[in-house]
Image (cartoon, rainbow, N blue to C red; front, side, top):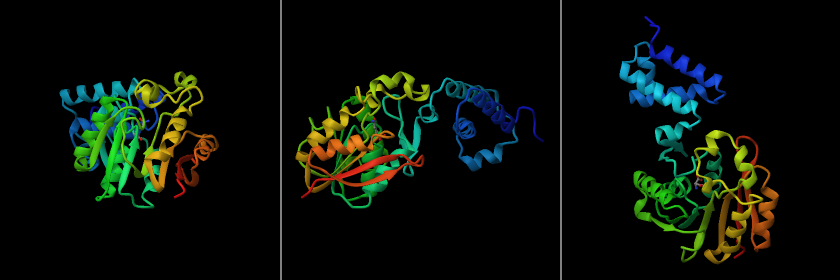
Length: 281
Ligand code: GLN
C-alpha cells in the first residue's frame, strides 16, 4: 500500500518544491539526498519506496532538501561527487568538479605521461584521476589555498595515489621545481565583473579564488603560459580548460609564448572546453 507519507510520496513532494524554485536536476537531487539519509544506493532506494520514513529520517531529509532549496549544490551537501568514475570528496574550499572538466582527462589520456603537474588542483579531480589512470606516473599538485590542497591530498589518499603525489602550496610555478611531460590546469577564468551575475549555486558555493580570472578572465592563462616553457620537457604538453568562447584568446596567449596548438575537445554543450598545446622539442 502506498501511504500518504511513503518515501515515494516524499520524493515527489520535495521534487515539486525544487521545481517551483527553478532548481535543475530536481529528480536526481531528491533521489541522491534520500539515498544519503537512508545510506543506500539507487537499487536500495527502489526497494524501500513504499515504506514510510521514520520521524528522524523525515527530519534529516527535510534538512537536506532545505539546503538544496537555498541553492547549495548536491555535491557540497553530500560532501562527495563523481568525477571520471571515481568518488571525490568535495568541500566548501574547492571548486565543485564539473563533468565538462572530464574533457581534459580524455585529451590527456591519449598520450601517456610519467611526470604530471596540476596548477590549481582544488579537489584534485585532474591530478588524482590522471595518477589513478597511470599507475607509473608521479605528480605535483599546486594550489594557492592550503585548505584546497588538503582536499587534493585527502582525495589522493582515498583513491590510492598519495604516495605518488607531492603537494606544493603557492602561486602557479612559484613552488615548483623540475620539468614535467604534462601540465594540466583548470584555472579561474570568469571575468571579475561577471562574478556577481553567476547563478547562486556557483556564486555562493564555489570559492571565489577558483572562479575569478581577472578583468578579462584571461590573467591566469597569461601567467601559466609565461612560466610553462621552462617547466616542460622538450616535446611536453600542456592542457588547459577554458570558458565558453575563450579559445581564440587563450590560443593567442600560448602561441605568443612559443607553443603550438595541438588539439581541442568540446563539452556536451558543444563549447570548446579543453585546449592542448605542445612545446616544440
Ligand atoms: N582542478 C580542479 C578542477 O578541475 C579545480 C579547478 C579550480 O579550482 N579552478 O575541478
